[in-house]
Image (cartoon, rainbow, N blue to C red; front, side, top):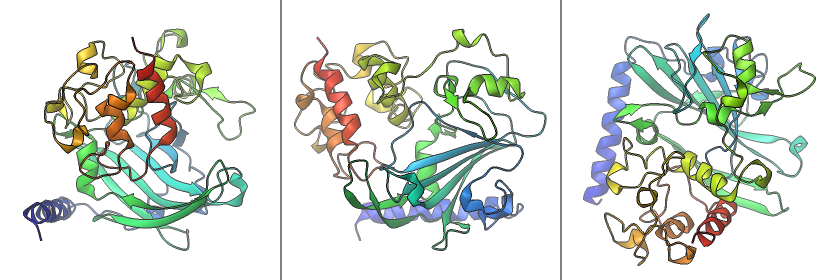
Length: 348
């Protein structure tokens, strides 16, 4: 076994034992059903009272897995509006995210396979992550600390049968992505991402999520909706310009690490949606650490030349030593790669 593998194994074991130690005074449910987040058959993912579904305009890519998102706020508590970062949820909040694959992306009525449900719970000492893996019977999910890999098969939008391995992260990997200044934080639910419509159960028509949160007391201090920022949907040209859609995709998929307070701060890249400095964005910027991760290319982004840009090379790679993101992806997101190539090609 190599020194690197020994080190990684040691880090994982340390995380495991520290996690167990932190749970000694608190009973952690072994089954997802023990929480009461869902009514009756929990595989149907029908939320219980007080658990609210939501969606994001441009979500994180996770090897084509679909996601069901829910939030449970503590009783009589609201989220305070801010339009510059992920919302600051009160202590007692739980964010719930279930990953699944439809059997056939062209026809959702053919069923689905639930793989994992991740919980982010805001406790008094900070955010805590837990992962529950769905059993073969699809009637419950069990607590998993060490991570797991599952073989999946599905029919994609074009009618092609796909087979791949889906990686369920261990708790140490959760900490690696949900990290800002060495503190665990949520990644997705910001005002910009929530500013879109959702069809709530029992409603005759879809409703803007921010307005729903405001109306039900979940969100406080919100200005008029017209003054709230809105992220475009990356693959819907009618929602934003090529630049805005590419930046939105980079923001959710890359900026949680590539920002001045993130785990990849030493790269000098800031892929946040709000970044205006072309160099920080990677345009004609040399990589801090060269090597095989650069693919022999000189700059992160070369205007007009996506094939010469390190960004495209790393997003296209499946080599663990070169690919980006490093976690949460095993296959190439071909559609977003086309978007980013067009974005770079359009640069002057």
